[in-house]
Image (tube, rainbow, N blue to C red; front, side, top):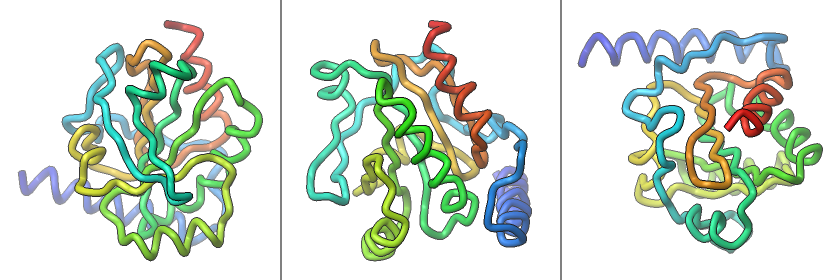
Length: 180
């Protein structure tokens, strides 16, 4: 367990160091999916969750799939994670370009006030929620941040990516929706 923690810490330091050198994400990024830990894998049923959104609403995966049916682009992030912060404008652009997909950012293991302040500052157009009680974190545990899961309209995980996203990676993940 110590070795896994040490590797995760080293990766986090490297990611933070790289993210603080530049305001924009790099042109390409490694897929650190091996850091998915105990997170559900491709073709697995997506664990259900219900979280409060920063705009005062709630998001329930099961309810969304039953009533809306659009695939979900689930991004786990935190205000203390520089790569998470850096990728949010790119996710926002993708959300605007792909209304056929529901984009949801869930702040995990974070302070409510810090999340609300950052969301007000960055003003993204997709929904942002806060993981009260570690419900999402426990259902989608990752050993590195950020973590992204793409869930099809049938509630199955069709793609995942651990690490910072760039536009090409986002498009590849969304493109996986047609491969199911």
